[in-house]
Image: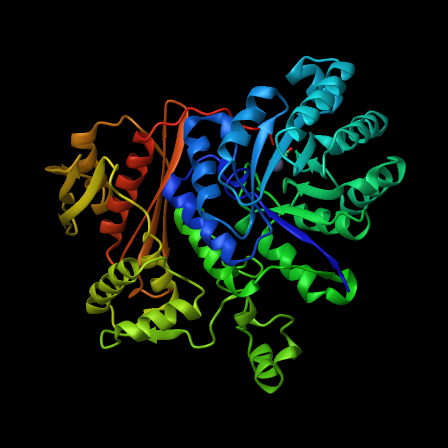
Length: 512
Ligand code: KIV
Ligand code: ZN
């Protein structure tokens, strides 16, 4: 039997650390459910001690997810570890993930601790954690840039104290595949008790090599856990992308010889969900999940694929959730056809109420748009299961007027804590006028640092998906809105970003 490769997803922790990618509890639970469908082995649900909000998210995910191990990050100190263990109590299987920097640079400049102090803290915190839980992961932060002799000393000790997984982060994305693979191989060879732990890779993508480095860690280094995120979401250039690493190991099983539990047919739905929730758009030429990933534009390629698909295709689009039949439903389609399409797309709504809500949104959209594509369906179900109860602002209606030579004007009606208000403004264009009309009431003082529009299914008849990124007092949030009218989509995205700004969460960020 082939060895098993453990897939550890950290979209909800390391991915969320990306500025603007913060998610609400409902959004996180919804993504966690999708990760469970994907059969991810371990879901890192958050960093419980970083804020009360994060604690509640880890706890809520531990309560509902039963098929994947739920993990919380914790700094290597008793308070963080106890807090994480508390949040993980409801989990079927919980894991504590301790981290402590071991590179000379981080120890001296960030921690202001000597190597001996770091060694002692690693030892005692692992012992403390192991008394609370059996499944303990230890990460020497900036491990790849750490002195190998010191790292061997620390890792041998934490394994002796009961760490069951040793993760070697390339925190700053500095590694080169062959060197990183050999680094892990050397650690495993030099540490006498290395066989008592599972070795794991955690690579950042600053030089665009996170996936390559992770695969080298597996192939050369013998790691059997990969830490990754959906769409490669993460700080700076992001983390190792789950879909790429999983499809590489699956497609080249001849080379890696490894099995995984992952049900790849749920990959696309997970990618769409994360992109629509965070507003981080997937580039069209992104491997596996980009809109062009399986589109053969050149005549020679099309001809080849029609004659024999493996002339130019190394994976089947269906295997990652793309459906062969792309034009789907119209206004005459019934609830059953809609429900079946959701199933084919790998989307399972959790209750009949959610299906009914999604179906009535589908009907509304079908009245305005003759053909509904898979992308439209994925966009409109994205909001199901997300409670809007505690949201400060809600969209009601919008009218705007623009004409060549005249300054555009917009009037918007929206709710503030349930009460309708109306705002009016001129602007440089209809979008500008609409957002200024909102601001005439809200006066958030936020700075807009990004505005982008994406046609969900590629034509002018398509729904527009708008992302707005706002910054205020050092906080960065993304809001996303979709509608066939891009001015309305923009107003929805703006209100969604304001809602996120409004739900303040003070948190301690994990490094890396
Ligand atoms: O990149 C990193 O070092 C991390 C650790 C906290 C595991 O994310
Ligand atoms: Zn990281």
